[in-house]
Image 1 (tube, rainbow, N blue to C red):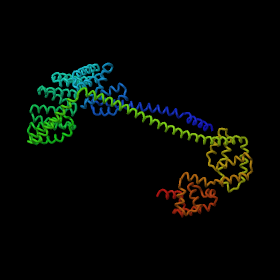
Image 2 (spheres, helix red, strand yellow):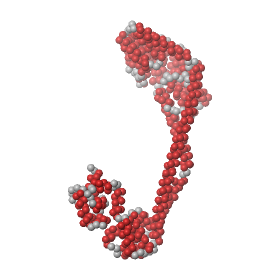
Image 3 (cartoon, one colour):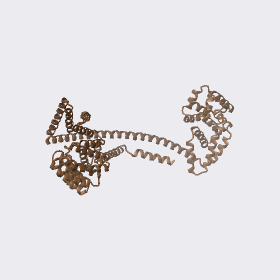
Length: 616
């Protein structure tokens, strides 16, 4: 009994101890911390992935960076600086316009002042130099490259130093200083001696710089060395570039057959549309020089189909130039005039675009975009906060509703448990009050019950067992009484009624006639068959109705016998429960087997009914 009381006290504490307002505040703070930490962690992971693939797959790196929402707000200061460097690096490697990437200058200034992270300092200065170079500020670009190289020497990263030397060599080459740029490329190749693909890229750049000097022998030397390195490294794309450049060099030296051989082999390594267009353009020029009409017309037709695929204005200029020459070759002067006109228009467009881009306009555009982005960021932040508050309000209401329903259910459970506890305590008090006189009382009950009508002996036999059990339990200590009380509490209603009558007789010493009348009254009020019927409906919901509908010819007695057959009772037990003779029960069973078509004598009625109703 104390266990139930302790449970009720514990339940009440759990339900009422957690105040709804405090619970809502705690849930709100936990969710806020959860969403904030998840967002920061997610964006940080995206940045880490972008930095890890920027060298090998810059397009994928840009995709990761584009997935970071509001990097200036969701990333830490250090992560945001890394984000800016990686973004500019990926755009530069994918040939995107970085002229307006002024953010890199602030990052560069920070790392140059801080000086505690030489690796990031080198990258910040390197790509600041790239932005300066894209804007035509060559002196500023070279100064940034020198700062980047000095920082890279501190960390002794040969690959970063080699990359910086390549960029310096490219800047020198743009200024026409080919010999100086070759020296930078050779220094870079020396730093990459352990990396075959990197060293091959340096040799490719060196060979390209010998072409403007008309030093074809040196160009072929470095191309051949680089071709072997590219083959050993397994980089098929780099290997194809060497074959393509060697073919173009032979084309420049009028060795058309050899050029065609290398170009055809290089074409096997084409991986995208842009490279295909370049090869179509190269083969068209080659076969014009070789005067191969069929091949000229073939590649000319391919170039006509490539025009819509090309976005690069310089590539379109070269395509229009070659197509005009092919038209002249075929004496199609109208087409030649058309392509020359398109060539001229595209040259004019390129010139006008370059002249229209002043530094002031670019700065104004950058400032305008910056202000607009800041305003949009504020608007979006406000909307996100509003949606977040609405979300937490809905969650809070749902939590309050949940706790209210749970509190109501707990209170109902507590009331029911209290009622059971009260009844159990009353029963226990009655038993404890009669402890001293139980032996005498039970003896009197045994004498009086033995005088009852023998017809009720079978139906009352099970209560004798309970009385004997009670007699044995009384001999035990007080702690064993609880088991007796639990047994009575879990009994069915008509059993409890009978035992309560016995307790009443014990308390008030009524005579045997009163006992018999009360027992008969209880049994008539709630008969054993009604109890069995209630159990049957719980075990087989709806089956009784199906039996009546399936077998309408069954009489009321036959229907009851069908129900009792599921309990596997004997004919004698059924006769006691239904108040009929054993012969009547056996006759009813025979009639049932006939009406429900059981062919085998003595067949199981319950199994046959279940098979008929559910297994067809």
